[in-house]
Length: 241
Image 1 (cartoon, one colour):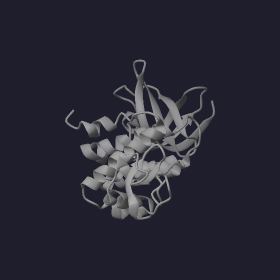
Image 2 (spheres, rainbow, N blue to C red):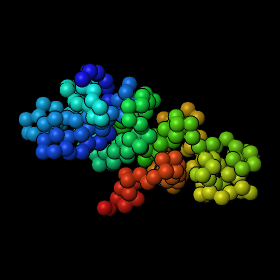
Image 3 (cartoon, one colour):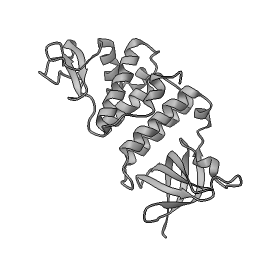
Image 4 (cartoon, rainbow, N blue to C red):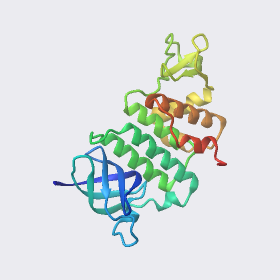
C-alpha cells in the first residue's frame, strides 16, 4: 500500500465491525476519500476524538482498492466551538452535507475543500442567519449553476421589474414572465450582495423576512441541483424536533 498525506475536513462517519469506523472526508488534493480508522471506537484510541465531523485534520493515509486506511491524524483546527453552540453546529453540519453530495470519490475538487474550510473557520468565530444560504449560493456559482439575478431569465427585462425567482430556469423573473416563487426587492438585494462582492455586508444583516426568503430559496436551488432533499433542512423546518 502506498502512503499519502493530505489535509481534510471530516464530513461524516459510520461504524464498522466492533471497533472500527469509516471516515468520509473532503481532502484538499484527492477529493472525497473514504477510509477505515481501525480501533478508533476503543477507549484507548490514539485519534478517535480527532475524527469527528467538522474536524479539520492533517491525515496520513494508506491507499486501498475501495477504502483507504487512516495511519496518522493531527488536528489542524478543532470543531469544539461549533459543538458548543447548537445553531452554529446545525449550520456547520448542513454545510458538510452539501459538500458531501457535491464531491465525487477520489476526484480532486480543491474548490470544495477551500470553500468548506473558509466557511467553517468563519462560523467558528461568528454567526449569521444568512451564512448557510450564502454558502449554498457560492457553491452553486462554483459549480457553474449560480442564480441569474442581472436580468429576467424570460425576457431580459431589467432588475427593477423582478418579482419572482424560478428555480428550474435558475433566475429572476419579471411580472410578465413570473412562474416561480415570489421574492421581494429586499431579498434580491441580499442575493446581489452575496454574489457581487459584498458578502460581509450581507452576513452582518440581522434576521428579517428577506433573509428568510433568501435562505429558503438557496436551499431550493441547492436541492434542485443535487436532485435530492437535504436531510439537514428538516432541522431548520422543524427545530422543535
